[in-house]
Amino acid sequence: MAKHELKRVAIDARMINNSGIGIVLRGLFHHWAENPPPFDLVLMGREEQLADELPAGLSAELVNWDPELYGVSAALKRPFAPNFDAWYSPHYATCLRPGVPLVCHIQDVLHITHPPKAGTAAYMRAFIQVLRRRAKYILTTTRHVKVQLQTVYRFEPWRVLISSLGAGLMPFVPDEDHSLPSILRGRDYMISVGIFKPHKNWTFLLERLANCSDIDLPLVCLGLGANQPDVAELASKFGLQDRVVFLPHLPPRELAAVYKNASALLFPSIAEGFGLPIVEALTMGTPVLIADRSPMKEIAARSAFTFDPDWPETFDDAMREMLGNEKKRNELIARGVERSKFFRWSKTAQTIADALLRARTGELAPPRAIA
Image (cartoon, rainbow, N blue to C red; front, side):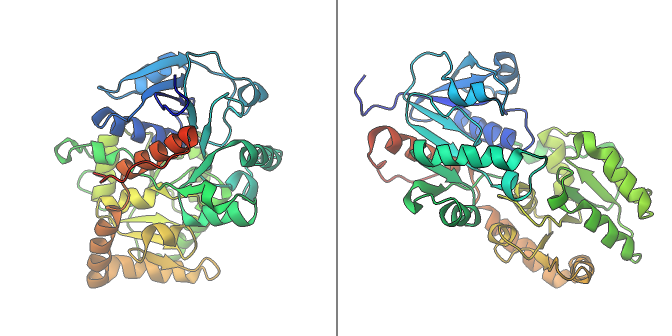
């Protein structure tokens, strides 16, 4: 094979079931099923799991590779697999010695700035230092994270490419397939989406809702998984047990309907790499309330209601305005729908393909229109 050819790309797909990275992988795979990439796909992960999650029509070779996600063996030992020309990972904790050019997504640095447990920050710092030497290109989802990687972790600007994401799996669900869960039919409600970690601000959210006795819309909570009991306990603490509804993991057709029929998305998170629920809500014409912080403001781009986390009462005021000021609400909904058109899996896939091509060949991809 000539050195300049890019024929086969290995993708670290071990996190395909994850609620965050898994959405990135599944969004890309759905796009590639409809718009095949200019190279063959070699998907690395648990073969059975991959086969269950892949969309119909995706052409890919599946290779069983399932070392512990944050283990040393995955980082340092190249997996046994047929020859490939480049390695792409949607997550920083990947194989650091694939034997071919490496392109890696660093979605955020929250494992350092908001570590979920002791040792996580040191682990990510170690990976970042190696990626700074070994990765040809680093992709990230917002300018906010790009600046962090350049100024704090000393990546050269030209090696960090912004590759925003699409609107989850919603673009692949036709409107006629939307199906609202029966528990929400005929009801008005607000939603909040996110895992149970301090930076997601669940305690703040429930405390502010308890303070707004004039707003009686139920809050539908999604994305909590095994931590649902923790938020239920908080809701009871603030006297909200009758106003909070918990939903399990939903298929895309139900999730799209939940967003579309919601009166608002409340997204009080103070730290993100991207903030996918914001894009999902904007896409479905749902008004959004976010913290006046990056990267949330970068994603919404003046199409969301905002509050200042330093002044909790501003959340209450913004929520009342979002639900009560019909003129501004409709204006921001229209802006949001327009803004959501910027976030397309076709753009994500093209940036990845261009980075892989240049990593392998040193050549820029030819100019092309992105659908």
